[in-house]
Amino acid sequence: ILTALFSSCAEKRITKQSFSFDTVINITADKSDEKKVSDVLSKCQKFEKIFSRTNPESELYKLNHENKPLTDEHLSHVISFGLEMSHLTDGAFDITVAPLCDLWNIKERTTPPKMAEIQNALKNVGYEKVSPKPFNLNNTMLDLGALAKGYIADKLREEFIKKGCENVIIDLGGNIALIGEYTVGIRDPESPEKIFATIRLKDKSAVTS
Image 1 (tube, rainbow, N blue to C red):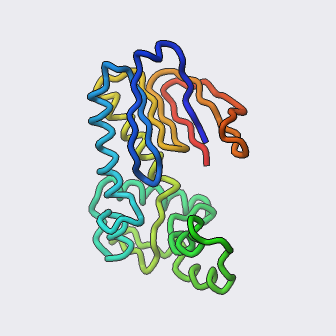
Image 2: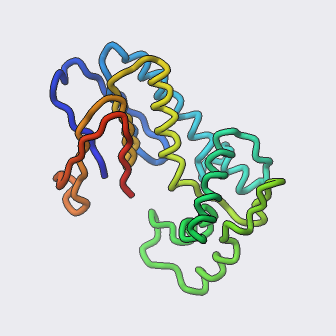
């Protein structure tokens, strides 16, 4: 878990918050850029309707459940990258693990699934099952949770740069993208109120998993 730390001229800064991607989003910038922050923050809803695996209106949901064609440029890019990483890692990283994610359901389950359930779910898991051209999931289902937030953070950062903003912290939970130079704190996972390490970054991103 990351947090960007700043103290100097804090009275000249503003933070706007929203909730998307099952994550509290905080964007901090100069007060003079407040309108720009609101404009960029509104784009999160657009990305939610592309990458959400649980929203029936999202492009990814329709791809997984309705066999809709892959037409969205953002979704296509992330899927292509995900398949490339799945191939390079021989499946150690695999974007077709949605059936397993649904089975484990860590938000609601209190006990692990049985091995027979896992084996059954694995029948529809495997990046090599996906046909790229023409695109076909072939009964697999995609989970882009390991990639989408980082991609979105990069896109939001690009928007701020286009708008001429020079001091921005984009905080998407475990993904922080920066414009300018900041100290980023890494929280202690056993005591989230404590920071056990810091790193100094300029125009970079920091991610925990």
